[in-house]
Image (cartoon, rainbow, N blue to C red; front, side, top):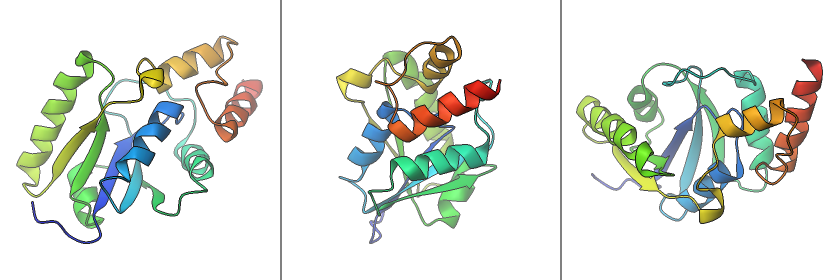
Length: 167
């Protein structure tokens, strides 16, 4: 892979909602990339019942990273490689929490490389404090009235409380 300057990386996902684990990976991705695009997927590759709509997720992520001008948030539809190519972002960042994540992520990385040979995927492991954490778990705990304040940032916690009060 040729190294363009600046190195632009994509961190794709549904981020419904963004957790401390996502934040950790995004900030650490900036050690290998000059700029990071948090790429919020309109549709998930997994069967997930969402809580926040796309615009709400984007606003929450922008609030979380308001202090970091090298991170921007964009939504995308369709193939990740098409979006990556359009953004001139040949580097994809993905998180691996457990061995169970590896097989799926490896298949996705290899398929993306078949579709666009210039794309590379790097895998980061979360800080041990977040290795069990997922947006799905946060949603479930919050919907059942549990305290998720140690798993998400302040703006996300406010958003969760507001959203769940409406239900």
